[in-house]
Length: 92
Image (cartoon, rainbow, N blue to C red; front, side, top):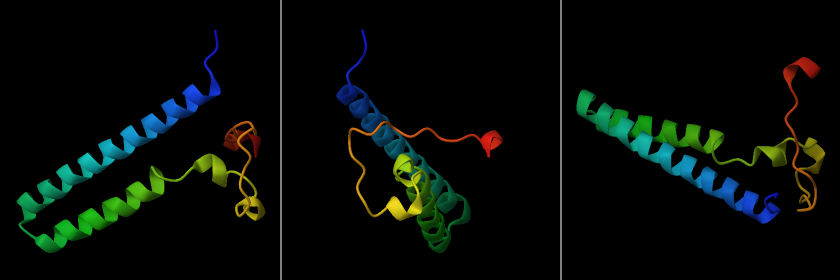
């Protein structure tokens, strides 16, 4: 018995949300640790902003969307298209 496509999409969205929540809580713990260790608000802000940029670059993007040719990024992808598979470096 196969699972429906909608159930898989919901599971992927839930796991992405879970990863974002975990990374933000981890960032908050790191920022608090840096603040307690250095007693510097300036360093806390720098760690917080750099952590947010790192999280935004790794967790948030829809990498399957960007795996297409760059000229197709401005056009929406149909929901019926199969998901793209990442190419391995060995095949390049």
